[in-house]
Each structure stands twice: as structure tokens, then as C-alpha cells.
Image 1 (cartoon, one colour):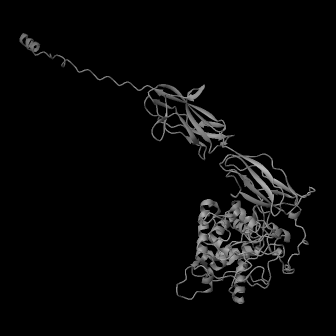
Image 2 (cartoon, helix red, strand yellow):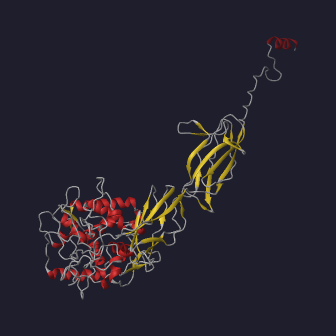
Image 3 (cartoon, one colour):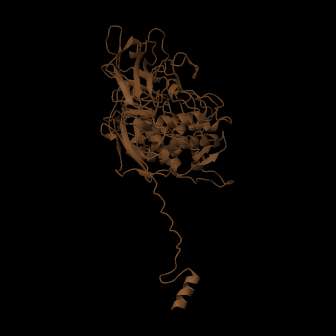
Length: 591
């Protein structure tokens, strides 16, 4: 969030304090601390971090955020034009372009990650807390802020220490990182999380469409379902690891869910209290959140991202004195000389599967000593659609007490071949460490027919039943496996037969080899209808798959039945009658 937000509108202290007391109590009951589950994901539980952990292991840069809470009374979603606007209605208003960006991001995530269930109101709540909805909607027509929104430099003086990672490309600071834009991404996170939300071909953290879409993807990583309260809390705390931040965002989320409306750009209500303001009344507190009031989080599985939360405490306020060049204490990152492989073995997986092995990297000094609390970034490089769990191609993990960072599990895509995962130290120029990983084609080792009905047909006709087979691999369903079907010459000759049964292509022409076939989600493959020419006999259809599975199916073509001969016309009349009139006459005369 910016250190300079322009003009602020101050509310009455009494009103804010009453609202703070009521909403904070409600929020606190829903938002316990954060810890890790057996999968390394953030979950809710009572815990207290150390100052070092709270600044380094969160997904934020620990820059300040707005602490104002919503009014107690829910406003009308659409206030009547021409009537006085209440405080609640003013607070509920979201600038038009900003609101549009949130809703477009929700729609995009509904398609990209439907299981996340991201509500646009969550983006609005975070946008309110981080930048006051882009400083009340001060954006251009394309969604870019009219002037940069920058948090304070993260130089370790009252905030986390994050040395420059982008050479000042995003924040204009080549010494330390600063949170950037309406959703307050720090450069090292925007590098992997940035998205192009307005279709102009670039990802700009100062553009609300880009920033909102990036925030949506960030909140939807790790397989989180935001309709689940525990996952929702985890996602918000990963954005900013502060209990007070969680409470504040949840309050605005609930408020916006009850009703909001669009207001013209540039006319949104600006918050007044900030987490780094001494005596701020935004949360009913007179001090900044202390480390003991923050929540503990496990090592982040993504790069540090935004600017939220503070690391100062009421009893010992953060120093505002500038750092003296050359006298600062070296950070753990400064001591890292190189990275060592800490246990990654053969990295292979079948397309669509999760790699069973996880990359493990150890940060060491020049003397081989382990370095804890160092951010190691893992980046997937190469022509591959493999990602880390959660769908991202970059993940950052804090080294543990043994100096080891374990990357999230890799999820193989459909592109086969070899790619690279590179481990580097964030904020340190040190040699990277490359890991080679391979994605193999989906395979089957067994094919069986799903029916035992004999496949017969008369010459010139069509087979009544289609051939369906099921593919398995080591007894499990083999889905998405490539297959080929060929009418072969004989059991010992796999060349294509020039006569007998055949398939038809889209133009109705005869074909006796089908390629590009794939088994479905249940491992099933149903071949097109078969036809027979005028050749009779027994023929063979062979189906093969990637992985070596083979099945030969027997087809029988019989001769068409001969038509019954037509009866000859009768040349005699009924018994006792003569066809010859003269004979009849003679017989009659003789009688």
C-alpha cells in the first residue's frame, strides 16, 4: 500500500471506535491463528510467531495497510439518486472501473480454477484494505492508476528486510523492494504472479485489471477452496500474515457481500487509519499490530507478495532512523554462497500424474554450513505445461532450520519430454541449481474387450456391434492413452490388409488403420462402426497402445445367403381337366 495516498477523509473517532469494537469482536471469533497441516498448507490454529518468522514466512512484505472497518449498519445496495448518501452507502460504493476489474477477475477464475470459488467481494475487501480501492478509483479508462501506489521501502526498519529483486523495474528502487499498485504486490511476487487482465499484452501491477486477476490467481493457489472458511482464512493470511489483517479483510468481505454499488471513478471514500499509524483508531487500537498479535504461518509455498501488516510492537515501536550504509547486520541471505541438492532423486511422472519425488535444496555458506530462513525460488523452465501444485510455474519456500527448502509437488501436464526446475536464492546473486524432470506419455499394459459377443457380418454388409476395449496399467484405469487400430494381414504379418472389413473416414472412404485414438476417463475406447466388402473369411483387427498393450480381435465375414428360386408357371390345369379343348370335346363325345 502506498506511503502516500493523497487526501484522506477522517471519520469521527467515536463512530469508528464503536464500529471497530463490534466488528473486531465478530471477526476475531472467526479467525484464529495460522499453522501448517500435514501437507504444509496454512490452516487455522492458535499460535504465536517470533518477529523473524512473522516477517519472513508470510507471503507479504509487511508494509502497512488500511485498518478502517466498515460501518455497523448495512447500506442499501443501490441508494436512491438525489437523496443524501449515508456513511454506509458511501463506504459500500466501489469505483466503477475497479468494481468491473474485480468482477472480470472472478469470471476468469471461475473458468481457470472453478474449484477455488473465488468471490469478487474478496478482491474488493483486499483492495479496500491494501489501497482504498486504488485511492478511491483514481484510475484511467484502461484501469491504470493515475500515479504509482507504492509502499515504504522494505529496509528492515519497522518492516521486513527485502533487498531489491527487480533492479527497480516496478518500484523504482534499486536498493530495496516496495509494494506496488492497487493490490500491493512486491516485485519478486509480481514476477511470477503477474497477469494481463485487460488484454493489452502486458502485466502491469499498477493496472487494476492486471492486479485483480493476479490477486485472484494468488488466492486460488495451493488447491484452496475459498467457500471453506479454513481455506479462506489461509488464503487471506498468505496474502498478509497478520491476525489483524485477516480480521479486517473478513469484515469488509462480509460487508460487501451484504450490498454494494458502483460509484464514479475517483469518488470512492478513502480510508483514514493505517496499521503503521501510532494512535490509529481504525481497529479500535492505539498501536500497530505486534508480532504477538500476528499469526504463525508455515514456510510459504509462493514468493512473498504484497505489502500488508507491520512488525513493530507497542512496547518497542519500530525505529524510523535510516539505515547506515556499511553498518547493517548481514542477513541470512547475505551469507548464502551456494545451493546443494538435498535429496531430489529421479524426477519422472506420467502425463497428468503428480511427481512422487519432490525437489529438495539446501542453502549453504562457503564453508558448507546450513543457512536457515532464506527464500529459495523454484522456477519451471522449458516447453512444458507441468506446474507446481496449485497451477503456478514458480514457487518460493523458506529454508528450515537445516537450511533445506522443499519445493511443492510437481503436477505433470500433457506435454511429454524433459524440462528444468531451477532453484535460486531470492535477493542473492549466487549460482542456481538445476533439476531435470521428465514427463512420459500415458501408457497401458493391458487391453481387454468389454464384451465377448462374436463379431460377424455378411459380405457387403456392416457389423452390428462396435468394438470396445478397456485399457489398464498395473491394474489401474489407463485414461488418455494413445491407441491405434489396424486391420492386419495375419497374426504374423502386421501390415495393413488390403481386403476384408474396413472403417470409413469422414468422407465415407475406406480406411483400415485408425490413429490418434485415446482412451476416455474410464480407460475405455469405442471404435467406429466396421463394414465388410465382398470378401469372405476370418480377419484380424489389432489394437495397440503406448506402453505396449496389444489386443487382437477376430472378425468373421460370411457369404450372403443365395436368393430362393422363383416357382415355374404351371402348364396344367387342375386334376381331371384337359388344357386341350379338342381332347375335351372328344372325351365328351365318347362319353
